Length: 286
Image (cartoon, rainbow, N blue to C red; front, side, top):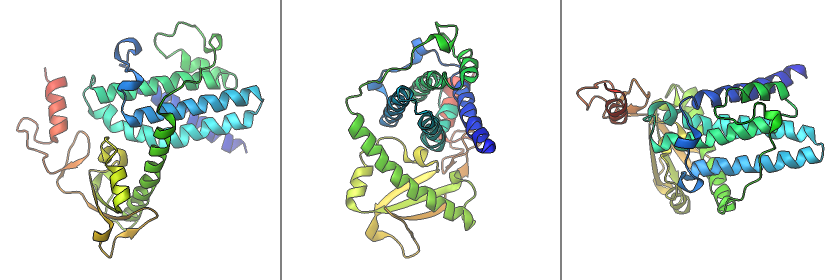
C-alpha cells in the first residue's frame, strides 16, 4: 500500500517538475494567449482542467479525499503525461521560443501548474509550498494564502470535450498499432514510423475537422488517412480503423528526431529538416 502511494506521489511531484521546467522562459503577462486564440487541443486541456477543478472543489466540500487523490492522479497520469505533455514536447523543444504554438502550450501549462498547486495545497501542503516558491510573479508568499481556483465557463466546452474524446479513441488505435509494430521489430521508437489509417467516410470527415498536426498528435514522422475499402489484407484491424505501420521515408533530423525526406535540403544545415533549419536560422543564428 505504501509503495503504491509513493508511486502516485512521485508521479504528481514529477509532473510539477516538468511543468516548472517548461515555463522557465514564460512571462504570463507578456506571453500568455487568450482562450479564444488557443488551438482546439489547448482549449480541450483547459476544459479538462476546469472539470478537475469542479470535481475537486466539490470533493473538498463533501470531505471525499479519496476522490481528490484519484482525480488528481488520473489527470496527471492520463490527461497530462499520456497525452498532452507527450504531444507538447516536440513543440516546446523544437519550435522557435516565441512561436504562437509554443506560447499557446505554455499558456495552458501555466494555468495547469497554478491550479494544480492550489488544489493539492490542503493535502500536500509542503509540496505545494515548495512548487509555489518557483512559480514567477506570484503575489502571495505562500499558496496557503490563496483561494481555490474558480470554476470557469467555456462556451464550447461540451462540444470540444466530445470531439477530442472521440479523437483520443482513434489515437488509442494508433498507439496499439505502433506497439504491434515495435513488437514485430518493424520500427524502434514511434518517430521512426509512417502510419496509414484506413477509415470509413464519416471518420475521415471527422478527422478533417482537426487542424492540428497528426504527426505531432500521434508522435510519428508521417501520417496518412485513406478509405477503409483500400486497406490491404495485412492491415491491423482495430476498433475504429485498420492501420498499417511502416518505416518512415527519409533521414532523421538530428534536432527534432523526426524522419523527413527533405533533411539536408538546406545547405547551411545539412543534418536538419526544413522546420528545424528555419527555426535555427531565424531564432538562434548570431
